[in-house]
Image (cartoon, rainbow over all chains, first blue to last red; front, side, top):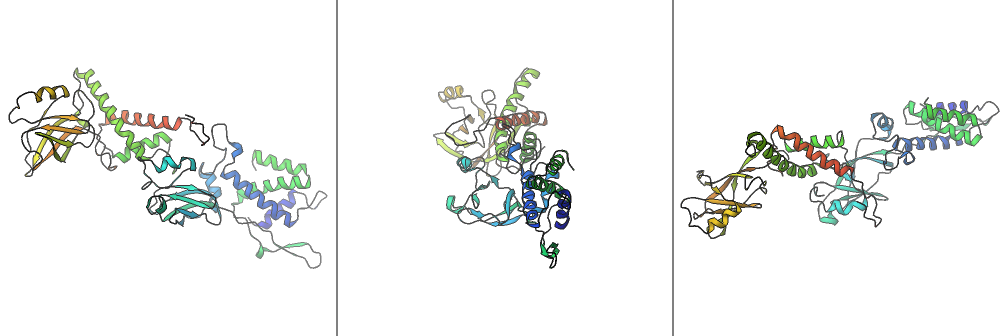
Length: 230
Length: 210
């Protein structure tokens, strides 16, 4: 789906040619990107839908093939991480969320939370020397074993992750006579999502348009689509 | 027959209801460690069941494994020590071990040594030695052999004992008869599910919730 199609659909839904309002290209570029991040958050799993004592959202990445399929445009083949002597490897620049971590030989590397680190480091049933683990820190991953901790080298890992979607841009050139924005396909960035998912994102964008233009019909339409499907 | 790894994998799938996730806490190593306990419990169960069926308690042959080339070291005068691959299962007085023999450098195998219970050890040590007879008694992970032949020179031990096989080798066959496998799997699944279902202390907040 092209970004131009998205923009026109949003203009149509917000009744731009009539008395209600108009969504400018800049507004569109803002709301569509907020909407796609909102949808990404929804697919990755929203904390709000956790149940008491059961931290599993209604929809979550990895829940089934269908959810994963929707995120596939943002999951590249595993990348190699270079791990330094302290066990640290920085996040990739477009890192959004963890998918899987492997050793170079495709054996797993387990995730551990900081407050359980002691138990894992001292396990004799699963010693870290052949059952490596990693933690997440503010700027990257921390692997054990490592040279600094116990003198055992762990120099690389393979990471599969969900990356940040590219920013959607509806680029334009003002018409020299009317100053009306004219779509510039060459400078625009189309959404990377599958078409069916773009409908979800457009509905989220329409909710923002409805709030902005105080159009209850648009908000209601958006809510109905979100609750009942397309 | 299945390898240890295959049994561990089956147990993990039963615990998780599917292929375990990469961050699963129950590991093959953990399951393997529970297998040792399960094999012991299965052997004891088999021992009791045979008592009900036959009127005599014994462990079925399928549970036994032969270990060879066990080193023999001198312990005290006329007493030699063998280190077992695992502590024998405590069936009867010492039925965890069925036979002990010695093999010389030419491959000749001795008659079986005579087992002693712990009570009999004290009695025997106060007796005149029985000529040409070798006796032994197990203690924990060791077997002590009473012999006036210098067993530490040119001999190795060959022992039959109840064992699930080599626990450190996940590719080795798990020595468990199929009719006891269900018991072993049930035991491990029960213990692992108990771990999964136990409420977790999810924060380091100074409160030791169990």
